[in-house]
Length: 132
Image (cartoon, rainbow, N blue to C red; front, side, top):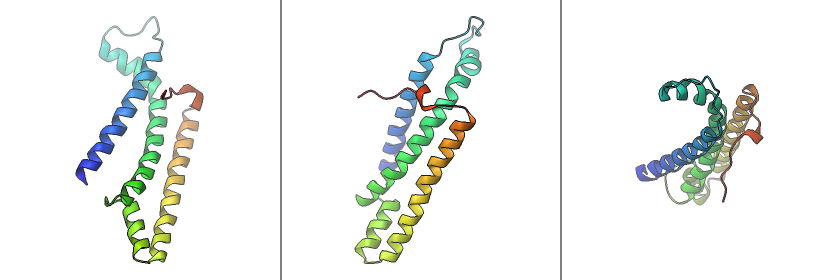
């Protein structure tokens, strides 16, 4: 299970880094931006990219919840595994209970994401998307 968790962390961390880095490249620096790189990053770039980073983070969190269900069907001990094993054991009440917990979890993540983006006044048009 540890290699799967490390793979998911590495994969999602790389996606967050790629998308956030793409947005950081689009930032137009002010003329009076700090000269030192650390100060420029901390006081100029990071505050501008932070909202998009949170939007990406919440999106990836929701995707990881769905991935855990798929990985569970493959035999890794995640929520999907327990749902699949409950169905295999004909414990449909347990499976339905777990599904009824999973659905509000995903809806809660989406609600948190929408509220944070609304609070930060971040629209979906401001974020960089992955081109395939």
